[in-house]
Length: 356
Ligand code: COI
Image (cartoon, rainbow, N blue to C red; front, side, top):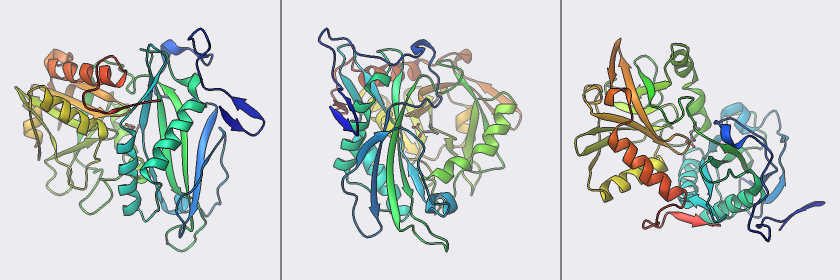
């Protein structure tokens, strides 16, 4: 039971085992924002640690116009998902990994961060409070968006004097408008997402604003998204605006190595382990555009995009298609293994699932 002022909600199944569901069109979820019932807020000052947070009704928040996040971009976000199983239980996928990545990012952005336990407990409380927004099995998931921000006021450039962890949720379906169909990417040769020594390797909000220009231009030309190259040699793959990238050649699966400019995706890491467990050879290293264009299959990974097969890549006017514009067999196999695990349809031998 969650006590929220005058409202008391009971997050448990009805006696007949059914669940109350929000009254929305569950068959047509995309990846759009939908307000839900509750959000979680936890604050701390620069010198204290995060202590107790609380659930509040979902709504707008008040921030000083001088808040560190608004003026200087001192902010990080995370993304994870909750799935509803057929038996009604709720599953989270590796939430401790998000907590640890947030810690790493907070260190880079000069922010305090909640402990792993505080983060995971806050995520669980937010999901349970919004249980009626978790899609029925097979219809999608509840996307969980933790934000860590410099909420205190600053004027000169400095770390903010106060920090807020805010967690909100929204029910989602497929990320790309293509649904589960392969996406079409264009290699960006002018603009870059990250640079050595910069913040490309942490999930800071500014990394995502920085890709909007190239992404919008690509979408206007009919592409699904942009694939970025390294900013020094301009020849090696980095990532797509919102996800990591993998190439497949025979039994070999290759993805760009994490070296400060690439976001250490939790789906990326999980797919590497799944692929190794299925007998694939996996390499994390430099991947050139030439190697990309010569691959058998290409796919993207991310919490939001899950495993998205790539149907075509366009680079300097040359368009290469993969698997006859279809879904590559390896991409399909990895997608099925991962999503079965996340949805509780297969045994969790990896110990990745947290059941609420
Ligand atoms: C995620 O996959 O959860 C992300 O954070 C990417 C975001 C741009 C939707």
